Image 1 (cartoon, rainbow, N blue to C red):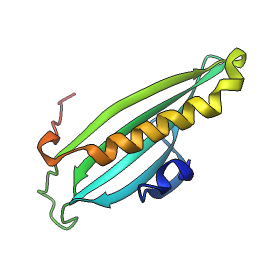
Image 2 (cartoon, one colour):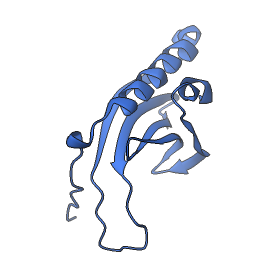
Image 3 (cartoon, helix red, strand yellow):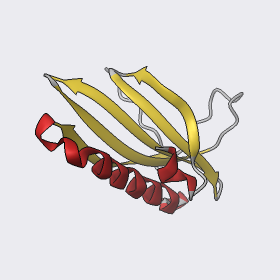
Amino acid sequence: MDEAGSGAQFTELDPFGERHGSWQRTLHSYRADLDRYVLVALTHLDGSAEIAISAGAEERTNSNDPSANPRFRRFDVGTIRLDSGDAAYWPSDVQQLIEQAVRMAVEIQPLQLEDRQLLAS
């Protein structure tokens, strides 16, 4: 996964870890005043697995400011269901989606960012 982002100066932010029911890994780069990231999430579903890849960016804020509300943007790049019959295609398909996500994250512009909306439950 690191190879897909290395040309654009993306580095591994965290190793795979469990978050929200998925195993996730994040690549990160800071450029043009935005934190940019690619997120890969692996989820087990009914005997198969699914890989979801997204690209995003957000403003960097002072972490000591509890009222900070950085603007952000996330795009779903693609999802691949890993069924046993398609095993030969998994590595190249996933690699292509990660490379596309890196390109998308690099191209996100500040005017595309949105305020975070907290929804009441």
